Length: 159
Image (cartoon, rainbow, N blue to C red; front, side, top):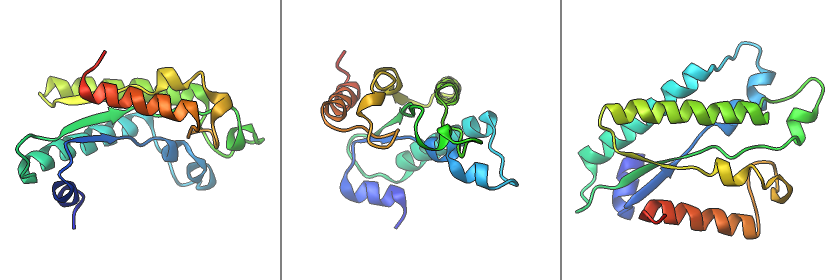
């Protein structure tokens, strides 16, 4: 069963998607033949989001078209792989900030082509929460609850 068919079966009305941490993670450092540029990241965002919107429009049987949102990549503090010498990953704060910019550029280009894709910016609230992260990318306690509330408010269109 395809991803879109699963969404149809579950009658999803809002879908938030993100990728980026893995692309900056250690596998690219460990494989000298691998390369992953900012333009490739942007191209993949545009491909995935446009396929998601087009696939949902073509296959979903919902009365209301499902809304698709891009969820910004959470920042990563100076812990783990980036503290090794040499680094064992590229999850540096400035790299993730650049990924955020590239994703915003990709969204703007998709919107110029009439793709209606929402944006949930976790980055701005998460960049101050490095002391409450369990692994550098995921949050717990009050921070996790606040991020969830913000995401729901963004999906529902509340200020």
